[in-house]
Image (cartoon, rainbow, N blue to C red; front, side):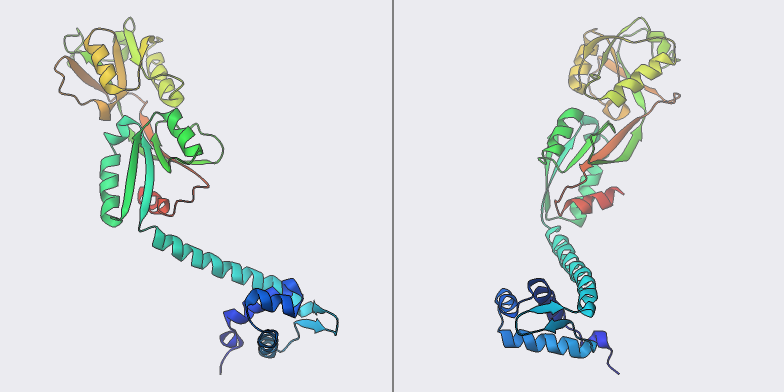
Length: 296
């Protein structure tokens, strides 16, 4: 036995929707690019399948019956779901090509980002990347303006409408001149440097990161004396090398062939620095969900 739903055609539901909204056979048939008689025939077939009158017809006008109004509400939901399904499959197809604009702080490229991009490229080889090294504040502006699709930053203090996900956590490391009196063997805690000058990331560029540095110093009873500020590791290394102060950086950045500086990883402290993936909630780039799925 053939069920009623098997007899229904999507075309008939679409015709019903247009007629229910126009309540005029000529206007509805013009919108649908079919003749009035063909439209009338399709509606009668639909009513025959449902065994109910969907419209009340007079010589002057067409009106929805009570059953028609009930059916219209359900048909709208059904057709919207069909449109969503079609849109999703189009997004899926489009997601295999295109471009994702990614912003990142330097430590992201020194930690999680290379492996992530390599893996994603293997899964979706036709999606290209545009990569921009930007600080936290610059990334937020670019994400807001939709010139970036995804940011990797050390901040979760975000405007409304943004989504963030922690993707990497690591220790801090001290940056010292190679000839500093404190070595890895004699180091015990950062309180040994309470009288030193520090070179730190600007507070306004990364409030969360800056506050963590302040906290780890406060745990040893002092406030760091900030002599210089920079977000660029090479600049920090040159300043340290030339005796302009010490620094505390993410351990992923503690790599250089410069023999005039050294690093001490801060392993036994509660503070660690987190890297966040950030994107705009309303971003419509069809390729982005694939990268976000890989992050999850």
